[in-house]
Image 1 (cartoon, rainbow, N blue to C red):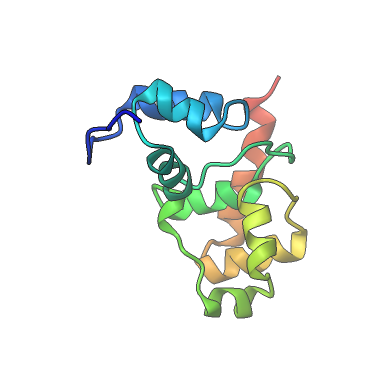
Image 2: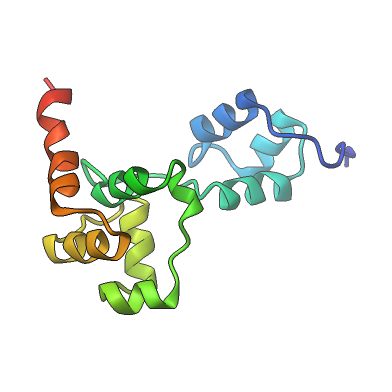
Length: 133
């Protein structure tokens, strides 16, 4: 097996390649093309919380997280978050990755937890009217 250079930084091109091929190519194939180890590719995917097959039309949870955090991946839910919002860990990650749609009750609970005002939350949801044709 070919040895790979350790601790090589991920370039924008590497990241774009992984996003484009995630779910279409194996870790081994992507690793070979990127001249990295399969573990390196896997860890990159996990670190950046990449996923395949977003199912919902609009990921309202992610949009709200983007309002509060420049990079939504910086937010890590805690036990207190799960308890105060009533959203379980598995449900949260399904919402985060867009595999499930957030309910109005969950949306309101997350908004309250994050300190997003009703006005900010409403404006975020209304942007869709002007962005889509």
